[in-house]
Image (cartoon, rainbow, N blue to C red; front, side, top):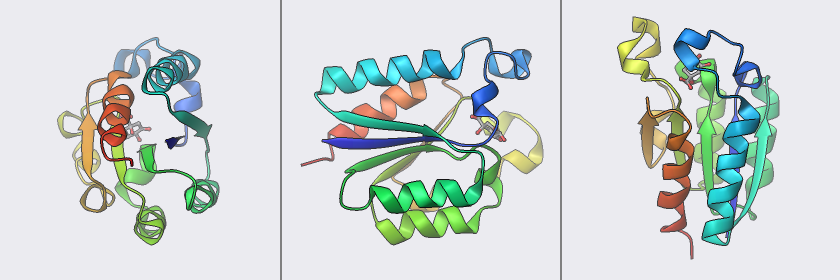
Length: 143
Ligand code: DQA
């Protein structure tokens, strides 16, 4: 059982980035939680943080034939990247979209996701737990 977890742009700055919005948890802390859940599930997990759209798309392509699930926080690309949406559709790997914050309770431009309708589900506002819940869900879908 193999999973790919993708963190989009600016998430590498968690811990110091707008702490009033994102808290003090760092990306390293989140990755530790993801790794612990993967261990518990007996799964392999590849975790990447990529700042550019093309690099995220390359990671999605690379997952084809390897991953049985993708957890993706596309960060700001959520709101406008048709290219990331198309890549997820192209590889046809079950995916879950995760947001640390509740994008529906923030600025109006964050309410729209061009990814949500091509993934299995969306988790927003539950902080790092969102990644853990997404892995648990996808594990139930992997054969
Ligand atoms: C985010 C929400 C996005 O709107 C924002 O651009 C991010 C992080 C989140 O995890 O809450 O960078 O995806």
